[in-house]
Length: 264
Image (cartoon, rainbow, N blue to C red; front, top):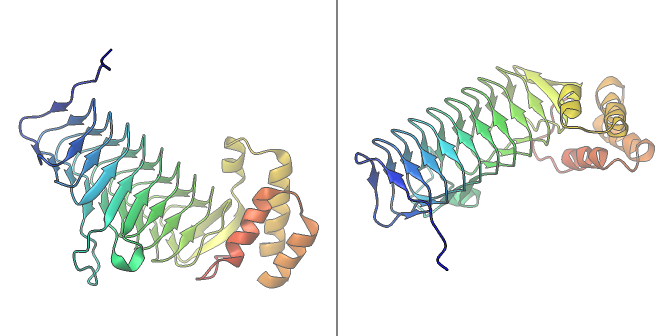
């Protein structure tokens, strides 16, 4: 028995390369452009005036709103046209005027967005950035090159993240913040330049974390931020006093692997 496929709907004014690979049930709206090395999975929806170029893959069920550009060359003077990639996961919402640039040889040749992310209007994601799953970036938030945003982090409107920085899992970056070091996981980080204001308690509760986990992280952040200990001393205390809470272990590992230092 033949497997039924959903037809694609391509507007007559759209320009789609014959070499592009288009899945089933896709919509490509008026005046959108899809390049030769692009692959769209099933049920991808490109609204009007989208430009998808380069070696770009967009996962199933992702919706791309008007005037978005994905996979165009990096804004990096070292970029020499190498065949780098852009990968977008499944079920993402990419709103108006978002820009996502392809990777470079200096950063692993890849810019990657995970699944179930919301990128609000005018977000910019530079070359070689890596976003995990469930990331939310509010209007006009901007990532410089080589930034890593871990799962379920939230970057507030008009915030900027310096190149090579990391934003940890479940972190909340307040609006208009300037992040120039690594932002701790599970933390509330706000300001220009940003400071850490402790645990993102509201976000943790919304995501269903247990009281045991939240209490353990509260104690860890108290040692990191509210004591007279330096970071090395605080980590030693945390390892001794707060055990068997995997999220605390994640926090410790994040700090110990930081190359730019962490925001406190």
